[in-house]
Structures are given as structure tokens and as C-alpha cells.
Image (cartoon, rainbow, N blue to C red; front, side, top):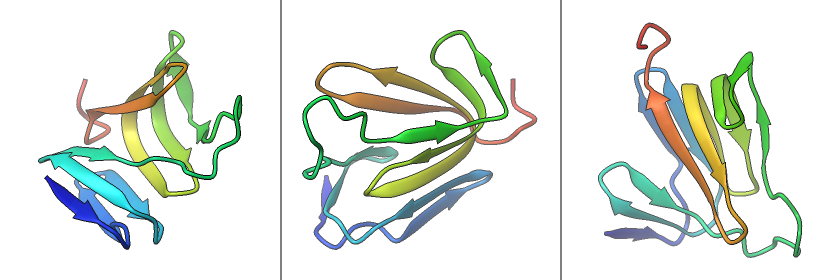
Length: 98
């Protein structure tokens, strides 16, 4: 586990790009990052997502997720939005992967 009080500037793995802000963030496992939006208001979504196409309710292609703490761009992601947490899972690191 690693804690970054000043955030993570950038992580790039193939076509996945994570750009962080200067806000505390934790790397819990090798590719597992946790960030808490301490400025969120109750009921506020706290993120926006843009994408080229969607599959079902939670899978997005050519996606860009923007928060106050980071921007994540990836070829394919899944977003599970629950009452107390949002989990973004990268399903593909390149556009050519299924």
C-alpha cells in the first residue's frame, strides 16, 4: 500500500491514461487506486463520463472519466455506481482487445 499526499501525477499503460490532481490518493494494490472526494455534496454524482459507445448500462468504450481528483481515459471501462462508492474497472488497455 502506498499513500500519495500530493496525488499521482500520471500513469500510462498502453492506451490507458490516468492524470491526477494534487489531492491525496492511495494505491492499495498494484493497479488498484482509491480516491475520496472530500468536497462532494450529498446526492452529487462527483464524476462525468464521455464515450463513443455504450454497452448495457455500465460498459463504456473510448471513455473519459473526469473527477475533481483525476481524469482517466481508457478504451473500455465498466462503472459500478453505488450509494456509497463508485468503482471504475478498466476492461481493456488497447482498442484491439475484445
